[in-house]
Image 1 (tube, one colour):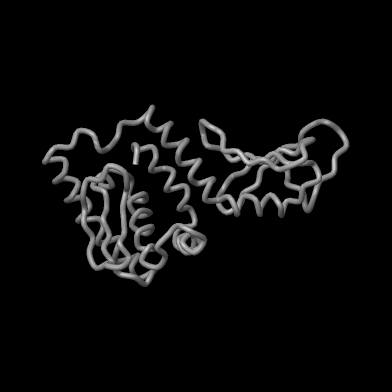
Image 2 (cartoon, one colour):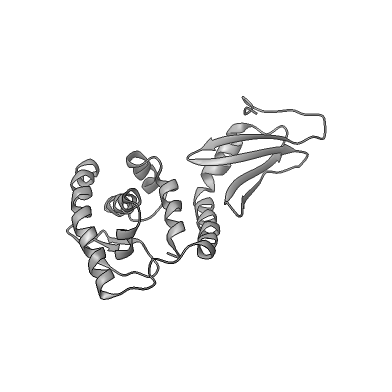
Length: 206
């Protein structure tokens, strides 16, 4: 069912349901006899759902999603991470010297190629990139020094996800936090960055 052009008025009791895409989020909107808008992120697939009065304006729903985008991202990541812990082995398990060396070789042959492309696009060059085993993060960046650290486990995920992490950290050379400036900038580089970030959750608890 299509979305309303401006607002919907309804005199019956049947809820009306439609889908919206707002800033990369697929949102199910349920119009029913309620007084306020309610935002939920529902397991198991971390689907975004808004329940709203029949007469609500679509622009108000869009405003709600944009204002709560950080909360939505956090809630979705938490749910998807919990799901992944039940269905996928953690890439950090079973490390041996041979596995670590293989990971380094893969990253050392892949990252320079990706960096050559993206440092030109982004206009920033890290002073140094190092690879290490990290228990809680895929990567990190210290903007003051220009140093980027990447998780060795990235050697064993699809290259597109490694690319996302590299672009994410390069973006931090402009934007320290994850606020609107960061989101706008990385969306310009990788419009599907949210999907890529969530895909990482299928590879373990990071």
